[in-house]
Amino acid sequence: MKLFFWINIICLLWGCSSAPDKKNETPPLSVKEEKISSSRVEFLIPGWSDRDLSLANNAYNQKDLSEEEQHIFFYTNLARLNGPLFARTILAPYLQKHPNKRSSWSNSLQGDLLKLPRLEALHFRGDLYREAKKHAQDMGQSGKIGHSSSSGKTYQERMDVLESYPNLAENCSYGYKEGLRIALELLIDEGVENLGHRKNMLSPKYQFLGVCIKPHQLYQYNAVMVFGGE
Image 1 (cartoon, rainbow, N blue to C red):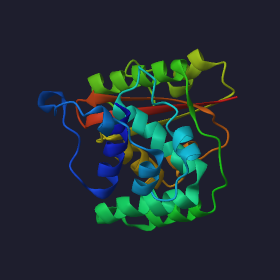
Image 2: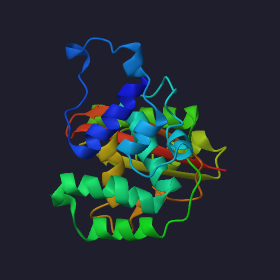
Image 3: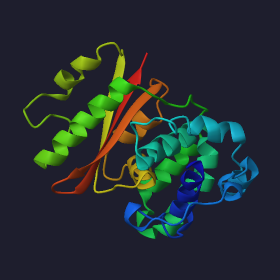
């Protein structure tokens, strides 16, 4: 239910307990409780307009995506739509909750967000999702990392199936299963000198995205984001 989406977002940001899994479900909410108002959402994530929250959440109804994969869309799009507000309402609480993530890398992200112009929200594309899913499964089952397949296909060879897109890019994440952490860690991009993951997520060259999170033999989880641009 859509209510759970918003509750999980706020819990991840401010540190309340996570939503129950399928093995420990709570009783269904009443109809009254299910109807969360836009003003309530704005109160929980201060400063965000109804329009931007809706634009950022455009992958909500994609049946192929898990809730955490939808969260990757949501947070990536919030950063693109309003970088300065994202820095204040998403990045700052995240760093407060995870003080070990405060570094020159997070400082540079804050600087980039503060000067970022408004960008178009990324939209789901099935072909990008299928390639993200294929690579996430491959890396997870083989225990490998990187952009080449376990069979030896290079990134360029893998992307041949997406030749209709003039612009393509890919981000890979290891060790996280929550959409918020995946998005924030890739944006912070600690240890990546060229900040390639951050640049992909905040680039005007891309309008479309496919994401997938899968188990990984070595890192427990891995996530793949495939970007496409016309």
